[in-house]
Length: 146
Image 1 (cartoon, helix red, strand yellow):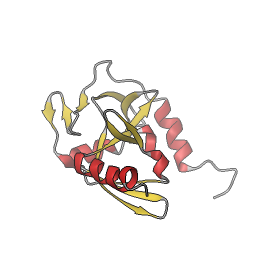
Image 2: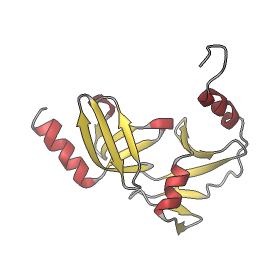
Image 3: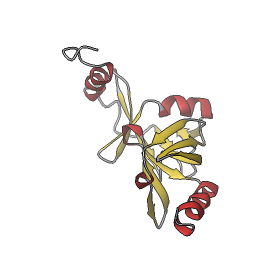
Image 4: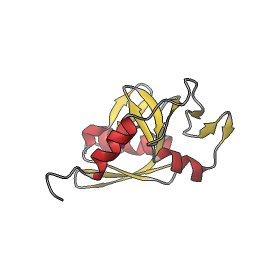
């Protein structure tokens, strides 16, 4: 790609940055268990995956952003629950409860606190390790000291 031509990502960022906020009231909610709700009704995972693809976290607030509009999303704990991971060298390949895959570049991406183990993914989205994944991580990296 030519250095004079903007990338598709930068052009999309310009489009979505200017999208107007549709409503002050959040229409979507993500529960502590990672379930997605629209106006109180649980969404099937296939729709949650679709909406996750346009979810952004900007200054601690979650939005679904398209070039035409922006919607607020309430996230109770984390937008995504990680159910398994695989380490390859220093990179971690993550699988979510919504059957999406993500990648982080180092173990330092994982933040341990009193509520669990969290990490930041693409577009600023916060993810949390699910219970089994949490114990696996603790055993592998904290107790064993790997």
